[in-house]
Length: 65
Image 1 (cartoon, rainbow, N blue to C red):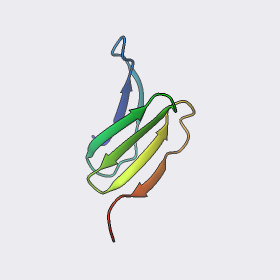
Image 2: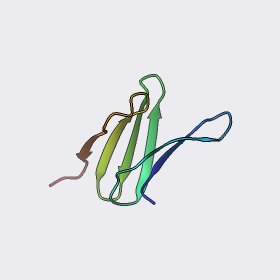
Image 3: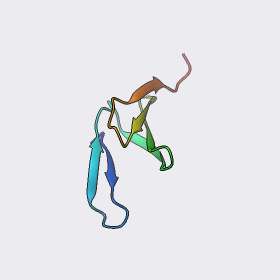
Image 4: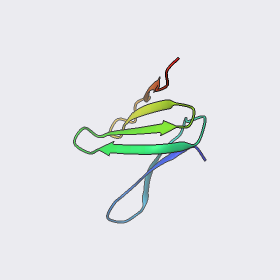
């Protein structure tokens, strides 16, 4: 459904959804110390999310031209 979902590890409850990918998401990585979350889709788009501020994500294409 092209959403990244953040859940509370202790309770399993949904904390937040991160929309915006145009294709299926195949990788997600989190860095708790910096409150960043990275997601990558099959369209070669990578999004870097700030989980504290919920600011607009940084996006770039991770594919050669």
